[in-house]
Length: 424
Image (cartoon, rainbow, N blue to C red; front, side, top):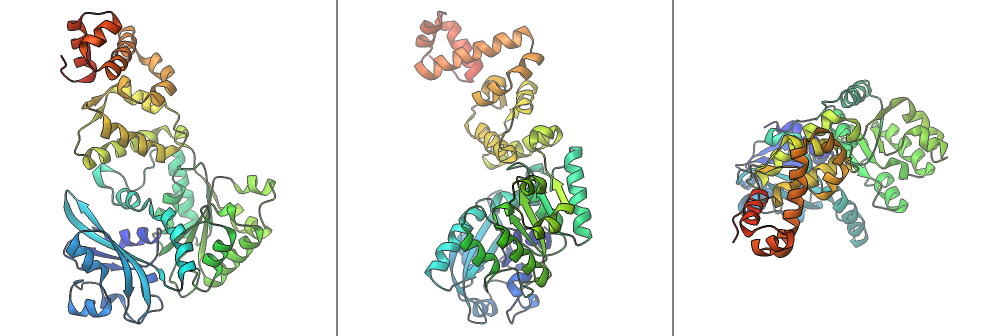
């Protein structure tokens, strides 16, 4: 396990990360955690969380609490410099065994209003934490960055060029197309990242979070780049202030948006400083419908991931895969994840065919299916739909036979064929 690389990726979710292995020994501590404190990485890395030295340094030691309980822990922790911080520790399991413990410090406690505002932001940011870990570590046969299509490879190459040159970057494209992951993958190789999402909060909170005294945009934070999601939500005034602060702190700004700079410029939503900073360094991410090679890889990845998660061995027939590839995934990667996981979780079959897919998939892909299907396939497809709808409604072979006007023996055979179960 490359704890160093994993730690830098996790810091794009939130700063102040530590990672301990399955034995409770610290293997990574982020620069943003050490910044402003009297401790060094060598004081922590290689030490057992339950050792007397660590128990004195952290009161209580959240990593040790997770190690003992194998459960998620969130509590107030006092550090070696007596600063009080909210800390969350998360156990990560593999094949039922503890693999690592990831902890991250949320913020220093200043008051209830600060707690409430930051909680709203963190709720939104942390919901994808485990997905980011799983995709980054490449488990279940997944890839660290899926870029089978020429468009994805071009986006990765272009972002890499800007990153290597120390330039800012502006990545735009549809929701769920992978903008955040591209930014984290590329710029995370250079150093510690901080990710901030402008979408779930108002301008006053954004100003406090990004420009206030406790902002991570500071030369003391040890951050290399700040990834700002929905950066177009910033007013022109805040755009100027944030970019100016990044420049003074020596931090590279990376903006994410659904719209190109040209689109926003035409709507008079950008400051001159914003245009000057980002317009030359744009990277476009396309929808999955325009990246067919990537779509197949994402389907395979999430199928393997869901099979392992739910101890299943579900496969898609070529016809079913054809429908999945022909479907218009409007929500892109997020929708692929949800739909594939739902299919694996709910199906009673090991081989999923066209008529086992959700109606939203087959309806959107009927033309693709019709082009590739024989008359026998089409007849079977519609027959299966009639049988399954009747069986789901009436639940007995006798009632299905009466509804469809066939013998009970035929109804039993059809239900067994399409539902994969024996009935009376």
